[in-house]
Length: 369
Image (cartoon, rainbow, N blue to C red; front, side):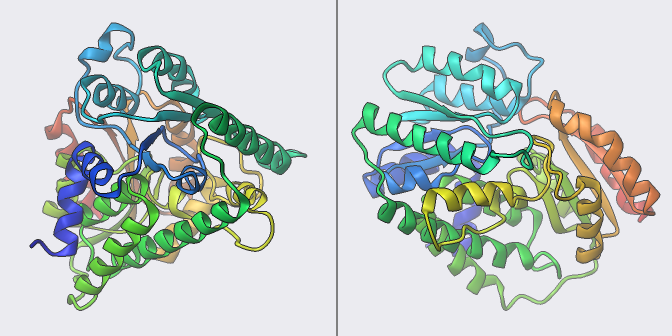
């Protein structure tokens, strides 16, 4: 029997297979969640596996009939998984208002999967706006009502509070593992497995596996010889790029990734109304390219994160055709330069990718630190 961390790595390599195994072992229906920021606790409370899938490495094929190649490969990869049948039977899907591409793809998904319940939740782009919390609460409650009408699954306050507790446990387990990257005990491959499975698995199943993995690697000797870097973007990359960090001698001490810290932090306050608590969690998130966060400038937050983790530099892992990250990059890289922090831009795709160019840029950057 494989050890817990090896189990996590292998599961993360093929999210579709992992999801089908979970469906079989738990007996729970699967609700696909398009990234990012939908409160998965709602679906967990309703008895679904709330599977947030951050793309795949499948190139444009079946979805080429209605998706142009000049959109982000994350959305393309998800559609390819769905159309190929690899995700198995889905109870439905939910699309948050992440970006134009995600919002515009909801109708396409609904037309290709008419038997499932395709819903959406709109999240405010200006989190400091008057009434933002009340708006999010209303959106969540409206989705819950639609879910009950379409599937018959009711979400009570008690069930939602219990799901929040499970979510907080999963987030705590993820943080324990991620923090082991500070002294080199967690590799990039292992870090990516934490990201993928936290978003994919039911909270309790992930927490149990992650807690076992933490016990396994806690006794490892620290390895601080590799160059400490922070990675910023949406995803760490396809597996070939993830492996580069380890093979080229990079130590990821922290991240500002959509699939990573931005999704995992913060916890949900368990006191009071659970829907209001989920709304408050969203408003308390770290700055992100997908919404305006007036509470703290994203560049200032990133600089604080670099200093706190003692990273020597920042790797921008930017998905090609990801407009929100592309818009933020000039001002973020400029702010880092002004603060005396080195950075490099890696433009990546989850499908077809020129690994040679990425290798050259990352290797040269690490050698310059």
